[in-house]
View 1 (cartoon, rainbow, N blue to C red):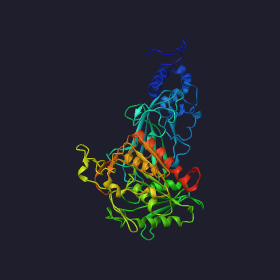
View 2 (cartoon, helix red, strand yellow):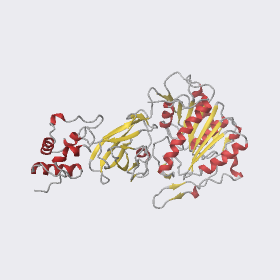
View 3 (cartoon, helix red, strand yellow):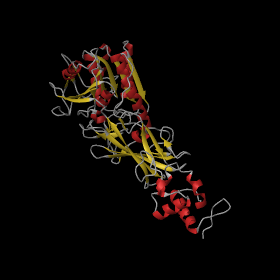
View 4 (cartoon, rainbow, N blue to C red):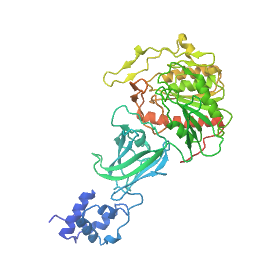
Length: 505
């Protein structure tokens, strides 16, 4: 018979109860003990969880342990609320498992053993079937709980206290994939799982699903095909008046809706506008007509829910210089945001009423391709914007009465957006114009709504090459959170003369 480990001085274990309890201790990863100490040992497991853990074991083990503890199996505690049947831990997303994608959440785990080593994993499958995952290693506290807003990750996809780290560190198995929402009427569903130990994630302890939506409750999505316009209008619930925005993405083209739908969910009437590579719009236009964008401005201004004091426009990359041109040449634009823009007209001539802004000179011979990765670096393609020979490509923003906000990343490897933005800001300030500027260390080119993960490289849909966008994971994530707050505050201030209102799904 194995020697008893009871420390009470006297042991009343039968050989069967002692061996069974030793087996339970080994399976449950508890300190060695025996049946005489069952009730004492039970206290280290959170209330309501003990019987559920034992129910996963063999009938022999279950019966022997309950007999030793003099507890009837009929009196077993019910599973804790939210815990899936047959799982030892409870994973919860607060304040609700259903939220907007740009909402921060609190991820908590209960029902673990004190100081238990676990691994948390997030998994998301996008609309093309691509799997994105992130994981981090944690150790439970003395109460057997984890709170990602306070508990530090010990390694994995990130380390330290990062409440939203499992989202912003999501990465695809295949290289050079960008997580972007195509259909804003459906959510991204993120599975949060907790696994035993810091090893191969073979034993699942608990799981929950977070539905992250891009369209708030009551927000209307309206397809727009009026005149030449190819757009989608998003209307917040209620009569308004609301601030109106036009949203432009970059030279990859298409009709991108997910940023516009989130802005509408935050109280903006938002028009997502396509201008190339969509339906009958050419992939690489020979020229862009300013009149097309003026149609969009007029369409938005006549919407009854839009406040009639002027609208805003925001753009990313090529869309940024178009936003600046609209604010400069078109009436009715009161505020403009440039995200990773360069302050002059890029790649495609822009024709207005009696004038044309030529594209900034560039030389594709200066394009660099990495021999190992095949990634293309465009950062040196453009001629020096400080050369007077390029100044006719500059957008004369100093003529505009609009307010401007420039956002750029110092690790933008697509082009030198930070340097160009600084020069544009200085030029506006010399003319006494009101302008805001924020430059983010470690941020890349693709500054998106918060919690969308960094895309360091992906295929350019129009050019058909894999482009290096730059960015460092943690720094880029923090930049996106800050930029999103700044964008909304900027538009509320200049379009409504108010602070950001609270909204919920």
